[in-house]
Amino acid sequence: MSTLLIRNTAVLVTMDEDRHEIANGGLFIRDGWIEHVGDSRALPAHADEVVDLSGHMIIPGMVNTHHHLFQTLDRACPACQSPTLVEWLKALYPRWEKLTPADVKLATEIGLAELALSGCTTVADHHYLWPNGNRAEDQFEVADRTGLRFHLGRGFQTVGIDQGGFAPRSLTEDGDAALHDCERVVQKFHDRSRGAMRRVFIAPSSVRTVSPEYLRQSADLARRLEVGFHMHLGETLAEIDFTRQKFQCRPAELAEQLGCVGDNTWYAHGVHLDDADMAILRRHRSGICHCPCSNLILASGIAPIQRYRNAGLTIGLGVDGAASNDSSNIMAELRQAFLLSRVSTTAPLLAMTAREALEIATIGGAKLLGRDDIGRLAPGYAADFAAVRLDRLPLLGAEDPVASLVCCAIGNVDHSWVHGRRIVCDGTALNCDTGALVAQLKARAGRLLPA
Figure 1 (tube, rainbow, N blue to C red):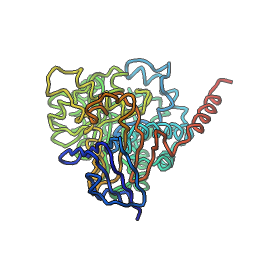
Figure 2: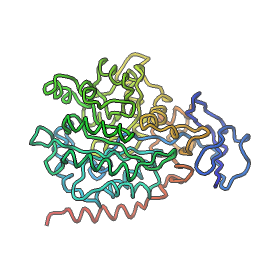
Figure 3: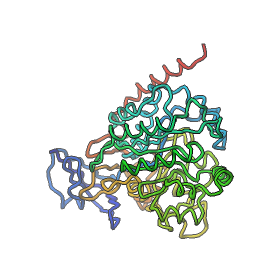
Figure 4: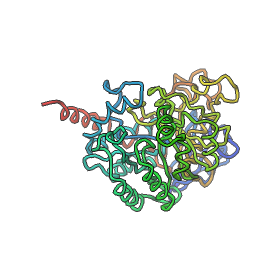
């Protein structure tokens, strides 16, 4: 069993039960698990590997609880810069019909590398389109190479544009076939052990793109297989109008009627939830993933996250797809969540503090994913953490280093470890060949040029 000693950090942010922040802090790690946390002088003096992080701040690795990695090749697409979700989708579906397995693998690798550089160590990807032979196997293969913990949401759509949905028929699936493959992917890849690098959750896209019967069946399947359940909910006002007209209720009420609620369930966005919606989610112990940048770009609105937190809901953070964010940077998402809480309210209790924002990005995300082994730097937890140098130009003059991580525009971390294995060193993603990715993108662009 190998040991790793991290010592002499300027400050170590534990996010433990008492939210300790330790000056001159350090970690003693054995075989990827944290054994000791505390003042460096109180830790063992020797280890197989010793890393001196003088002048650095350490935080738990951040958890991204909602992404669409296949969209990474659609950043700043001129055809899809509309500020409404429906028009945006109409512009993108013709592009997504052409996605090959090679495209998805390339998009996944770029997105995961960017996430790793921004301090993310666990990613939950909501993958709901499977054209041209795309398979779950491809994404797990890429995730294994990058070294991040990877939760794949085996998603699907059953309602196409001919039935009032958005997608062409080529991007929808037969519901029974989709559920059969959900079960196959869970059986093949879902690792229930603590410290697991691979997990699977079931993730129908939304109440507008999956029929009520298959929403119900997918939620039942997730409960039977004892895995997570995830979908978009309450993202736009148009969604609320849709469910009122078709089902005579709000989206959260429909989710409850269909059994799409529970302590294994979290929803992406939740921008437009009223008190009755919050009561439904609280009653069933379901949570929300906050995706602030995507909500801004698509003009969906500002989710009142502090109001949800005050109501007892668990909140995590997500970058969402790079087609509606143009970034896979969770550090930027962290700062945006903090800033938006100041824009949307004048009530002090609804203004998020920097430490509350960091809490959402770490222990909040871990809880949404049903994990009791990540999100904190404490004995018995996996050694997932990131380090930031405090003498970097954007941080000079900052008096509170922990707040500076959120308030200042840092962008990337300097070092990162997942289960005690280093994946970022001196601002470079160790498991990513950027030159090779650029070459693949150029070759792809050449193939897509008209003859």
